Image (tube, rainbow, N blue to C red; front, side):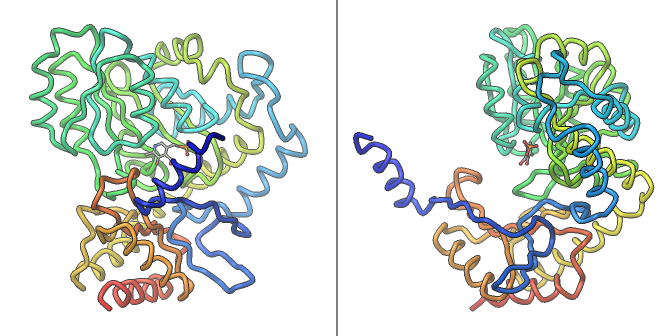
Length: 384
Ligand SMILES: Cc1ncc(COP(=O)(O)O)c(C=O)c1O
């Protein structure tokens, strides 16, 4: 291919940023492989629901009784009762008036952001928001400004030019995936109210594990009626696949009519919808799960920081350990692997250059003894 593909790959190699796809026998907090059992701290199965019989059975039943795929977009015969039931369940669980499903959280972002902001509008995005939100902001054609991470004063400063734009959208995450910290979303909501702006909160890592009923930080907030929009994924704590927006009914109606990633995309599969619905029902019945995960995670964080490791500002189930150099981070991850521990090495462009880290995702299904062993091993490799 004229050599340019090889050149691009060589440049990626030179930066120590080459990624490789690797197959594992099953997803989940533990991986049983021919090479032994791994504790998986690189996944997002925060409640261990990928292995829950009720979730698995729901998916299997839907595949058998409804079908493996939806075969059409929601607006063209692709909607089945499961989609509508899941949307009602998500809205009720989150205490929001309505919900709309997408095939992934990524596509939900690509659907909602260009709807809320267009040419002539302003988007203010936290410097560390997920790639899907930035891609969506770029697609929208709006002016995109990035504000300093979690810095409400910087948002205010950047709003000085607000009058030059028609609409304004502020974008943040409730729990930042690579930092494990959380946004001051209530303060951001106040700023949005003061400046006639909207606030979009990506709850991908919060839904299922925090907030009222484990339904995420923005659950029950009445600002959802006019100022607040929330985005979530079904692919992490809900152990399935898909994404959703919760918002006012009138905005949902506009999404159905205008969001291109809703209109021109095959509907989420019936097994995925059924699995997510079963997961929501389980979480509703187990309000204690969120607190148990928080306790487990606090223990890991405390032990790491007591040993002098830098866990950034994490205070959630996502615990980064900052290493800095790309190659060194990869080498440490490889050493942990030889001890049966999978910790995700996170490098640029996912995180800023020079801030490579090992990221631990804690799951309720991780045994404390295994987490202790993983922490000991991590401290050992970093300090050796
Ligand atoms: C913060 C955040 N937002 C959105 C997404 C996208 O969700 P999905 O995996 O369902 O496309 C992710 C997934 O990695 C994420 O971490």
